[in-house]
Image 1 (cartoon, rainbow, N blue to C red):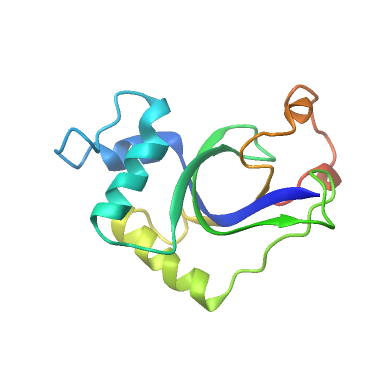
Image 2 (image 1 turned 120 degrees about the vertical axis):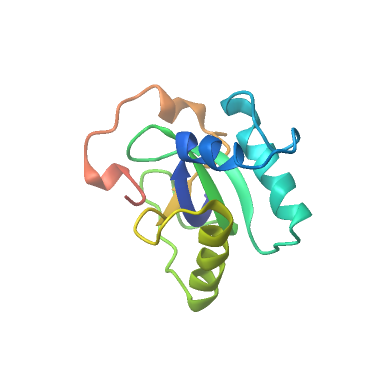
Length: 139
């Protein structure tokens, strides 16, 4: 069993640049640790629902990203190494347009991804390098 989250992502650098365009200090992160919280505050202030921005580790690239979560669940039949991917739906594509409007990134820059264990509850997997494509949930 694993918690998995699906949605669209941008890099933390892109997220920090996006948030720097908002003059209100509550949106402008001084460092990467505030990106997740400040993104959520901005989405809530703009009354955009159905999306929850969360900073997570990209399962394949091992880099920090800002994931705009559109779906999340406990998957009883998946593990981190064998994770069933979410399929992108029309609702997700509608929410993607909201992400693009908010962040100013293009359609090509916002990618769909499924992230197993987004909150890193299974810490053992982060010390072992992953080499095979089978070990990642999605790219």
